[in-house]
Image (spheres, rainbow, N blue to C red):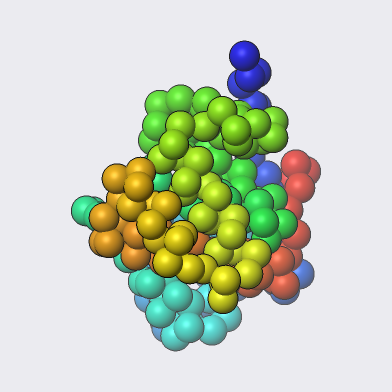
Length: 188
């Protein structure tokens, strides 16, 4: 039996001073109304808000990929984001998406298997999604018809595959953006 993983939330520390809400321009305030997951105005959001136009475009796209209703199940999107974030070395995003997957799946079995390097015990669908997320993140140009066939073999349709590709691909960008703008650790 694989033990349960205990993933404590990490704190992200920006290298560029975040916009202070009380000092924000009207454009920055408007942009910050649209946040990832529509939950809070974090230091990361306030750092990205230095460029409100690109922040708004990025966040609308991010939300459309990760939080839209329909298509690929939300837990599967989170698994794709987790696989990409692990390959990309973004511990902050990996922890966020591992925790979110466990919450949506109402189990941390998949996340524990991944963190304890036991992906071999994953169910077929989870294993196919995780394998594809890692493969696409390592060398995107090597994605092939065989990769699509492997996803179809576990019951995914074309819309779900496209949704998965979007979730993985946006983390190629999101992880790199987060790395350049700051670092994460357990300290606050």
